Length: 485
Image 1 (spheres, helix red, strand yellow):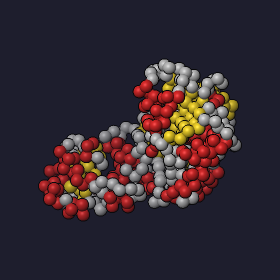
Image 2 (cartoon, helix red, strand yellow; image 1 turned 135 degrees about the horizontal axis):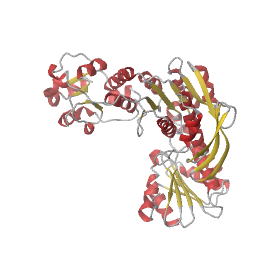
Image 3 (cartoon, helix red, strand yellow; image 1 turned 45 degrees about the vertical axis):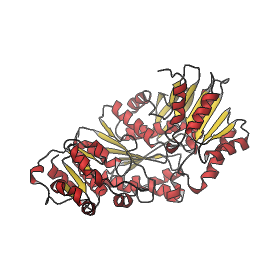
Image 4 (cartoon, one colour; image 1 turned 90 degrees about the vertical axis):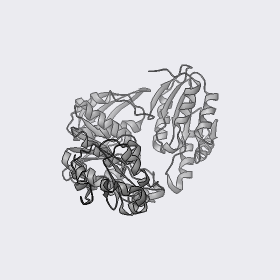
């Protein structure tokens, strides 16, 4: 893409740009100067843009890194006029290479939308309070197994910056057949609506509505309204894929601009799992039922929540044109994404399930019950449960209630990690668990677990991203020998 086209798509005037640069080929778009390279465009972001575009917190003004971006080979940089005036002394020498806009984030999103329009193929968009990344990876795996070249966002690229950066990969390679994009939100500033304006979904998937980010949204009803933006923002004639087991999600069918496919395990749904049998860690079997057509599946991920993710992915793949034979076959070959139910066996004779990426009450309880049902009866079952974040003003009560539910399960030891996990431990003790302890942070929990663990133990490690319970895993790997699969 030529720089002149980039400037056109951004919506900035050509005047002032060095005319010898207009035919330069642009191959990448970055917001971190360290990622700059030859023929790249650097977007300098500042606090006003972050605030205007729904990002919480204080952010560094990256206008100071324009010089560094050019040193690394950038062909141009996108800058706000007021930031240029503040840094005129440093930036005046680059004036012919600067693209001036009122909002650099909005400019990034505008060019991403135009690139998407030029590409013009199907988008599967996925949102929900929990499970988005796993469902995205499962959907991408199914579609890839069916022969599609799939564009998907990496890491946590599911917001107003990561989403357009993902779409802009199409500039370097527009041969993707379909995009599977996870859409996140954490504020009442219509983040999902904005993402849908960049890439209106052909298939809009809603996983669940849970009390996550409730401190910013206020009520679970407002969370549901925010998640429903993905259905309201879908293309005319598209397909909404909705969780029939979550009444708030099921009610979003009223907003669909096309057809609806439901999925679930508890009631009537278009896509369902029947005869679920947990054989052991990494081996669950069930019958996949798509509108009355059934196939047996051997599923390598654990927990009911992951079966729900698999059903959501199956429904999305079905909506995209895959048949049940291809879907059921591909489900048998999935792998757990990093830190999401990864089974780790140690030479010293104990087993750890690393589910450190994130946590919420439903997923924690689901994994604990999986741990218990899949462990040898004579093994000690140990749960390391990190604080669950973004649960709002009722967080203490939610932790205590979850602890009470854990306390009646057959857990031999519970380690609660950080903050509100103290209430989790108290609730578990109240419910009758005999060995429940609180640790101030993940490092302390890892040290304690390393001292207590013994051959035959089966351990679940789960916590919200900010608690970094992967440190517990690191402590074990430092001290013991991990068996390579």
